Image 1: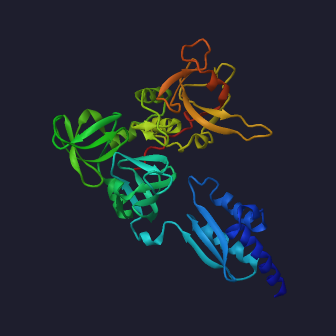
Image 2 (image 1 turned 180 degrees about the vertical axis):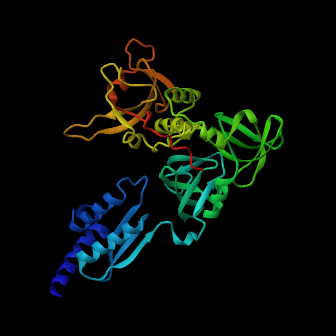
Length: 394
């Protein structure tokens, strides 16, 4: 039909702006608006969801390429493109997990702390970390790396050698296996049940291992990849008992947070080997049974909004404090830092380039931080009678 031809020829210019033009030629188009709208629906936060679709031409053939992690997103994208173009669109959109992975679409982290990176390279930015025993979803593979999704839905690349690759049955077997959880911030697994024996692996707070026996003051354990050894009984707890004992209280949050005093700041760190600001709050709450989102701005969307009062008198121990730039008519709010409120205007946090420490909003205190008081934006409360801890799923 003539109408479809007009639409198609008009689309050639749209494709140019989406796929093949220089930066100077790129402008807003109806097609880009449609794709942006679908992306806002299915993947408003690229850190936790995938919607990466482009439209291009191969000769006179229109091709939709890219990846999504939701079959409905692909279905809606293709139906929308068909409706706009009134003609054929070649489907080259992949739905993750990649079918090439077969049934082995899971990884169980086998190193004490797995470094999850923003791209599949050793030199890439550290995005987050995954602890031994954590089950992650595998979405695709590139070289020696897998693109994974963490239990909190955060996305990133983890080396294949850092995991045991398995299928759904392997995950269920792991979940059903009796396990212990490391409760001290750092310890060692050794070949024999004595402190002088050769190390097998290190272990940090939150690490999960199979429990295969006990002797004296030691527990016989096995890592997800089959390495066996012994860990001191005082440094672990039976995982089921530990889960059932989790109570998200102001005192438990303060106790756990204080355990990490002095741990150095590490961009992307979420473990006792180094933590960034939100990695610290995430670890503290995780060890008390609640899985927070990964980044500070994401954590600022959860919990319950609290009005602090002029001298923070309305806050309670365990409330999260968020810092950055307040929103205005000209600029949106920007959250760039998070800490945990304690009491009497004091809080604990991990400032960039520093370590886990106490600071205060009180100008008369020796650890007063004027810059943080000025950059305080708001507070959120995750502890309350209606808050049921989401205990670790592994």
